[in-house]
Length: 314
Image (cartoon, rainbow, N blue to C red):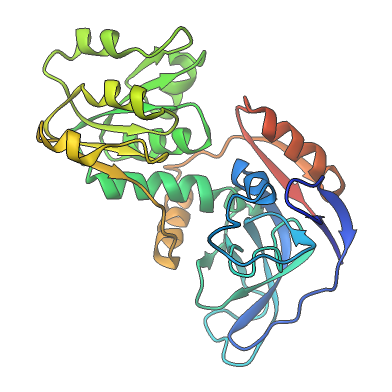
């Protein structure tokens, strides 16, 4: 079958022929209908997980997928042949299977969920970005009526946080670089601050002198995170996805600090599917590309600045 892989860490992704996987005990064989491009994919290709997980080469890339179950191994009973599913293909050894391929195998009990009645391209975008967004809101305990300062709001995760928070009656203060209130407001943001010229702590403080309830920061280093966290009042929560939070320092002000490490589960993905079906999530798909264009799509992802998701259609 065709797949996109690298033969070494840091190598150029190429379309290659690899053996079609065979489902083992408790596994499903899925014919891939769509795979989402995420920065995480090329970071894995560069060796991001080299010290924490076993790898194999050629390393087939891609994590987020949607497709149809076409075969199953002994003991796999959760889904039947013909069921449409979506989820994450990440598991050890990394590279043995991947979403940038015509077929992949996944554990029947792994982080996958039903994609019935969903557009496969939209479903494929959910696991990493939307899953992280929902996980952040739940980890922070952010609830209706509260105000959250969201730094990095215009990116893949940020746009999902904005939508999910707004749907829960959480007031979103979106911090972006060059993306204005028109776009962020359409996603549910109450206010938008442009950080193109630097962090916007003073502007937010002027509008919220008593502080805000929570911070979700997707982009800042430790210094900038600390500055933004100074806006959180006692009893609030500050969450970083880059492990930039200093829990000890923030605890002296009565602020709970969380360095978030996302854990994906079938239940989380079921919840995301329900959010999409209920139209509480909008997936902005920028491009749908054939498998042969995946190396180019990865190169574009490295450059950053995308305003929508790129989806690979094998």
